[in-house]
Length: 474
Ligand SMILES: Cc1cc2nc3c(=O)[nH]c(=O)nc-3n(C[C@H](O)[C@H](O)[C@H](O)COP(=O)(O)OP(=O)(O)OC[C@H]3O[C@@H](n4cnc5c(N)ncnc54)[C@H](O)[C@@H]3O)c2cc1C
Image 1: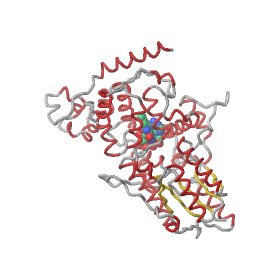
Image 2: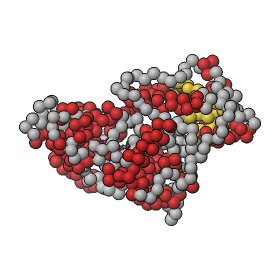
Image 3: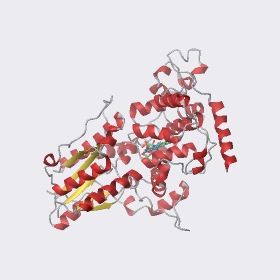
Image 4: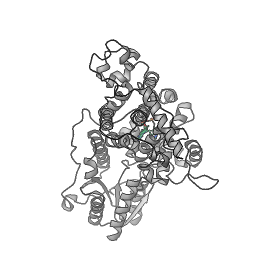
């Protein structure tokens, strides 16, 4: 029987359970032919900012190249019209390839679940079975439960301990190799099936070449191990150093499986901390799986009753935050890094998120939506819960009254001001740490940097006062 593998967020050939199962099953059937498919949801694609479009496109192009090297071909369909159009495209190609089973990796976030449900139903109506296998997690969401009562964890540290116990042997062994392909790949003439095929055009140009793909991800990990892993525990919070792996894009698109990374980690301090960061990603995916509404709603529902700012002034403040023009150097550098690179350092994500919620009194969802549009490593669970954690409305036991001071954070995590000067040219003339406090220099504003749009000290008090109001409602 011929088989079809529908690539989703699994842009890799190695350590890909669903793909391996598809190929192995095709061989076992005696037919051995496999069709590979990727479907662009054009509506969703067009809503993305330039860098996100380019990075998704580059990821699919790299996947197509690696299939070509094996003598295969990736059929790329463009579906305009949302979920039903995606489902129609999968059915169309499955029918043209004459398959009875479509293989794909299971997704766990609400959009991924809705997509696999829609595709599964459309295939079923055509007499074709959708087989979902594997995930982009070392331990699939929904698996880690408390031994005491079988409920999910709501706090990271005990989750990590239980997760660590459940790490599959694969995490310690070599990743599963791709079964021998031989002449298995099959390319139905998709041009005859649909005129909308191939990579879609991006709507905006970007200033640099966006690199993506499985081979690039594996090289990035190799470089990280040599370059920064040993000092990761100390340097990962420094915005001015390249102390982290920059693998978030690859993990979000499934260009590398976390198992592949975990399998290579030992017990040094840097390796332990890196393993814990990978576990944060798995924790948030687990929390979102159990609480799909927390993608947009408050994980701690009481915070929906908090007083947030709305109206013309708050719209202007939101725009200043988005453009990196709040007058707070560390916040502005972070927001400009997002626009320039489609990636922001984790510490700086926390600083800008805290500023939006605690200094501008806006709701976390407004910031999360901006991140979603621009972050090339966008991940629904890590984004929603990274925001909720920082806003103080999420999984952390830590209280809402934790308010990041953007100046102190800047001085601590960018002590020489290099990060700020890199992204905010209006501060480039200020030497060393003075770039963090232009108001202290006689020429601080001589290159046109904006004045502070709010007073952090006052807004911190305001934030805490609103928390007291909320407590009184309980
Ligand atoms: C407000 C906010 C929004 C965020 N949105 C996203 C998002 O959309 N996508 C995303 O991948 N990460 C998100 N993060 C988490 C984190 O900022 C990024 O994963 C990290 O900066 C990526 O850089 P890196 O790959 O060099 O990380 P490294 O430090 O090298 O970490 C390795 C990997 O561990 C995972 N990881 C590390 N820290 C976290 C964390 N705090 N939460 C979850 N996973 C983590 C990532 O997959 C990362 O690639 C967000 C954090 C905050 C505070």
